[in-house]
Image 1: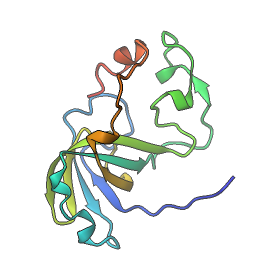
Image 2: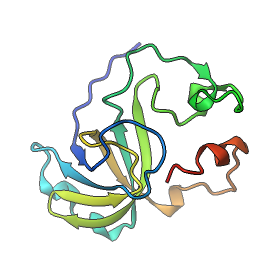
Image 3: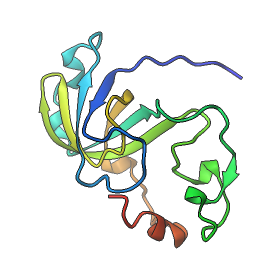
Image 4: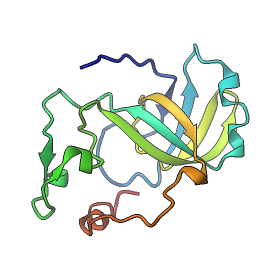
Length: 152
């Protein structure tokens, strides 16, 4: 297996200190570029309403994750492969979230609907292009509605 090394391009600041589930809707986050990333990297990003944030789950994981389990350990949900879930305990501990861009000021972005905790290292930021969103209807199992009813 290849080994990859990533350097954070930015960091999250917010009030969420623990990697817990649910109640992310009220969290407003600031994303600030790392010192070595020039401010120009964010030039005109405010022309977009939404961004995709790729980040590292830096406070979870000891390498002992399982490849299949019941989501959130709830046996009322079917056992699912880890790649069929959005759980933080993943093989590479990488998160992905689509956020709403509230403001851009120099080296910082203010966003909402980011489910990353304070201090989270950001690996990449991409604007959302509607042409890259699903071109057909999406489907998901019914248990996802129950699992996420308090997420935001």
